Image 1 (cartoon, one colour):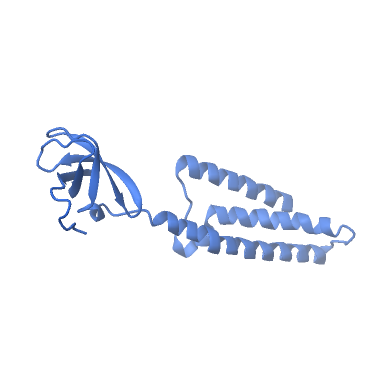
Image 2 (image 1 turned 90 degrees about the vertical axis):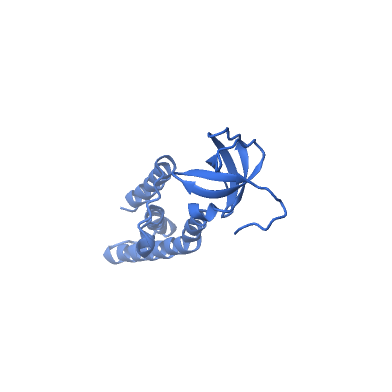
Length: 179
C-alpha cells in the first residue's frame, strides 16, 4: 500500500509539473482550499508512502500485526500532514503570492513613460516597452495624433483601446509626470 502511495505521489508530481509547464495549469482551487493544490496532494502521498516504507526497514525485527500497522499508518499520516502543511504554508503559498504580484491592470499603464522599440509609422502600428508593477512589458502602440514616431523615442501612454496603446511624444523631460 505504501509503495503504491509513493509511486502515485511521484507520478502525480511529475504529471502536474508537465501539465503545468506545457498546459499552463496551476491546479489552484482557490484560497479556501489551498491545501488541495496538486503539488501538496502529491507531496502528502510521497511522504506518507515513503515514511510507511521506511519505518519497517528501520526496525525489521519488530512484528507488525494489526496494532503495529495502525501505528505505522498513524506515524506516516501525521508526518505527511505536518510536512506537506509546512511546505504549503512556507513555500508554495508565498510562491503563488509572488507570482500574482507581477500582474497589473491595463489602466495602471496610463501616464507611464515608454520607449518605442519598433517605429510607429504614420497612421500605423509599432511597439513600445515600458515598466509597470516591476515588470518590463512590450505592447502594440499607435500614435495618438497619427504622426510617425521613431524607434528609441520616449512616449507617454495616453489611453488603451482594444489592447492597442495610444501614445504621445514626451515633449519636456523636466515637466512633472502623471502617476
